Image 1: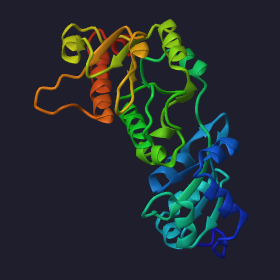
Image 2 (image 1 turned 90 degrees about the horizontal axis):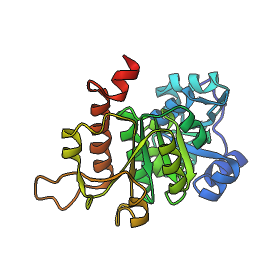
Image 3 (image 1 turned 120 degrees about the horizontal axis):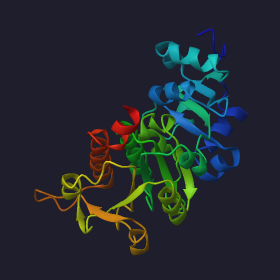
Length: 286
């Protein structure tokens, strides 16, 4: 692969050591860099820009991966990313997956200030309050992207957006929509309400039923869904901030839905209502 380094980078290189340290949150925060692993994430990172800067700054690739994904290598170099050939052991040392796919990118932080999200007058937002599992956080972000949400907000009590498991679970969606991080839940709710957004707290013990909300046609306007902790849901003080606390109906014998599944149901319900006749998207985008 002539476009990359002619020889694989040494495992003792300072570049490899710096990349390896990004598996730890304190180093990510200090450097404002994170890891994106696998062809899908790296491709999306190479296509992403924030504030006029390319998000992908560095890429490590095995010889086999560089040949298989020559288009990604070309895209990485086109945006100015430094490309290193690396042997499989180096990739394994940098990667946080059990079976690395031969590509590991280093990316700039890309979170969006909460004020910018509000200024864009969002119509559908997912707020992750007290979500601690990185896989769930990434999966909810992916669901929000698929449902056409305008933004995701992670409160200061939630997991790090740039945790490698969260980045992997988003399957590239991290690079598709604005995400604000570290916002106190009270500030998130107050800001969204001031922007004309209705706040719905998703909770299995909610007083309102999602089916009833859809039947009453109350979900066509701008909406933010607040999702809580995987084990204990939302604390009472957070529930009290919402305009309504809504449960997803369980029609069978299942005890409950996991967080990501419930989030997908809620977000798609809002997306459908907003695109129906009279919904906020059909009105403003027709």
